[in-house]
Image (tube, rainbow, N blue to C red; front, side, top):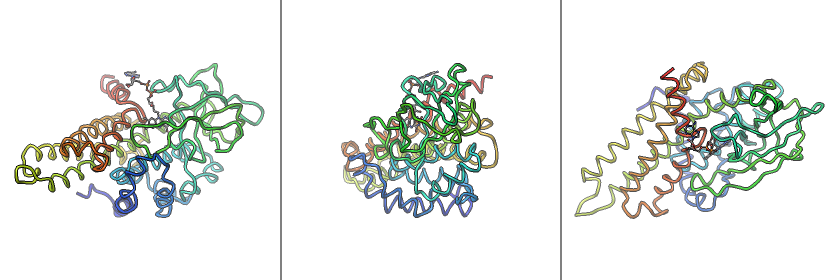
Length: 381
Ligand SMILES: Cc1cc2nc3c(=O)[nH]c(=O)nc-3n(C[C@H](O)[C@H](O)[C@H](O)COP(=O)(O)OP(=O)(O)OC[C@H]3O[C@@H](n4cnc5c(N)ncnc54)[C@H](O)[C@@H]3O)c2cc1C
């Protein structure tokens, strides 16, 4: 099935698939065990120009959009979703610069991000502000030509590894979320350090850390958009990035099904391959049907976004794609574990890793319940 992809999109998808197969799959289990950040693979992705795909051509990108980014994320996730998340989270930190950066900010950061020389990250979540992102407490008080930042962000993907952080903080705390702004903070800025690294159940090759700000002075020229627009920037960024999480779930599910098919052809019981049993075929049939359904649900909203629809116009479709793809991924990976019998639980066969990885996507970029809140309120309005 070619999914109406353009020649360029097919080329990008094939290239990402080749890297996933040849360079990532052989080391995926090792990375899962060690939890080490995959800088070597990041370099390979950079040399293959995959960081350029969603960056405008004026800033050394290839001028693609979210669809191209999602195709890469899907293919990388088939082999290792930790690497896919490192790539996608850099996109999450970069999107606000593309959408809201001024010329100077774009010129400073986008060409280096496109070349994969540096990674980006996005800092919104705090200990008291998860689903209720409007409850953030981190402050960025104006002081002369700087903001003075104080507070802690948590669960930040690429934390410690990225060079540039798009951070949402309160520039006018009295106004609450209406007084929030988005500020670019460079790694190494005095007063900006990293807290503990999360020892996650899945997606272990990606780094998740706290960002700690203690009287960190950041030049006012690092403000994205305008003061007071922080929440709007964050919500538009999340809408654009949720299809990336859906694509990750899709790729993980496809990888799990590939393994299950391969195993079912080889494993013999009662004198025949278990793939000959209708019970196994029915499970595989359901898996492949759900994967295809998720693929169409994912590809539609990103095509609409790239065609110029505003994220607000397609936010219901985007929420549906994240909700369905993650729930589908959990069902599919569970069936894959089941098809492998006892071996499904062994790290050697790499389906239990995929189940752990896809479970990790339940809260990422908004929980499943928040997706339902968004869809439910839209259809009952
Ligand atoms: C792998 C991973 C990567 C992440 N990367 C980043 C990142 O790069 N940057 C960043 O800023 N954050 C990141 N996050 C954080 C993520 O955005 C939050 O985990 C998410 O917003 C949920 O917040 P929480 O974990 O505090 O859960 P909570 O909001 O505390 O939710 C707990 C439970 O309550 C439910 N709940 C909450 N509100 C409602 C409601 N109104 N109705 C019904 N149920 C509700 C939730 O669905 C959930 O089941 C990441 C998380 C993960 C797991």
